View 1 (cartoon, rainbow, N blue to C red):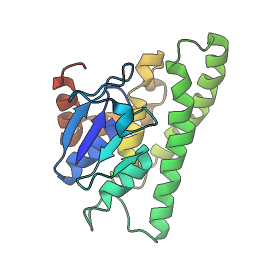
View 2 (view 1 turned 60 degrees about the horizontal axis):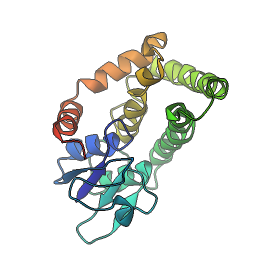
View 3 (view 1 turned 90 degrees about the vertical axis):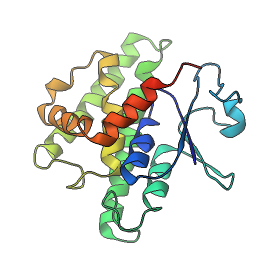
View 4 (view 1 turned 180 degrees about the vertical axis):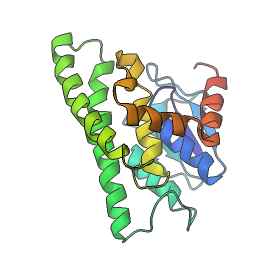
Length: 203
């Protein structure tokens, strides 16, 4: 498998999960502006949507969209602790978390990266994001991880929370979330993923 990634994007979450599961993979860096890959390809030929993450399988199939990639990966290693089995109530709860992160945290954060959006509009998105962070802070005040133990939803949420300093948002304003992020940041898989990404050369 090849994971196409760019630093400071949601592709960090499948990278973490690949390492948690011990699956073999190749890491390929993408320039989000030029759409060129480190191995010299036009990334849009791999993913016509033009953004990471993209997972190229050994059979030539390409899977995109973070929540779909995360669930595909976790199901390659039956019985692992990162996700409940399909068809269970617990799996439905996991999918609830993934959709919430995708639409309400990731989705609310994305406009804050856009320099063309006026600050007055960004303020609206910031206030919406703050409400969602309030909710997560309350949930994580009572438990260490979203589903009780570390799982794929936590890899995704951690990834999005790492963007907060870019927006000059201090996670310390949500103490439970700050402690949660520190716990995940200390995991060997996370340390290895961040180090591997940092070691790649810009495209």
